[in-house]
Length: 167
Image (cartoon, rainbow, N blue to C red; front, top):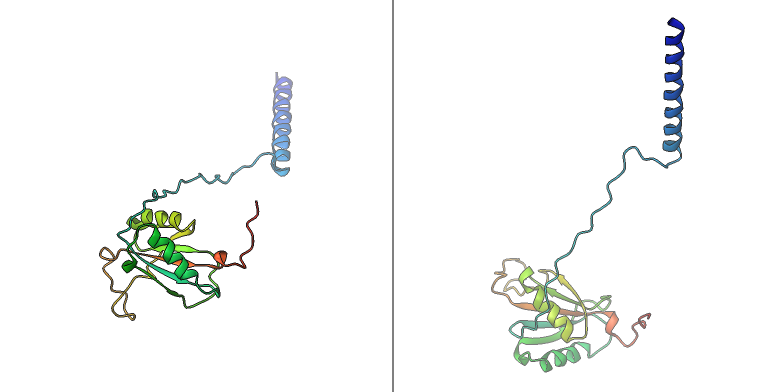
């Protein structure tokens, strides 16, 4: 009986060693991963529906070296129904802004910003408090709920020298 126990344990040892060898080879070659990194789950970004809301004041800034873009964009916005009194045009502090962008102050303003983007023929939309009007430029104290302003910063993509879009 002792010989059969030794043979049985030898057979079990051989099976275990072969299984460990196969598994070790699979791990070493990368076919089996012991601690896989979880794949990122896709998240959906909520995008507000575009709404054309002419009750917003609009500031149009030309951030390019080409003259007249701010006034042309202002005319487009006024033609879409905005009152000329609430649409102001001027030059930005720089002339190298890459992409035309509409900035809005609060998440509630996003739909209006997207609607304005459609009016001017497309633009990026971003939330920023950088263009909020203040009485004192040295303070950031602004009642955001009372401010209903969208700011269009015209970028180099709107100039005559803009590279042609690849199709």
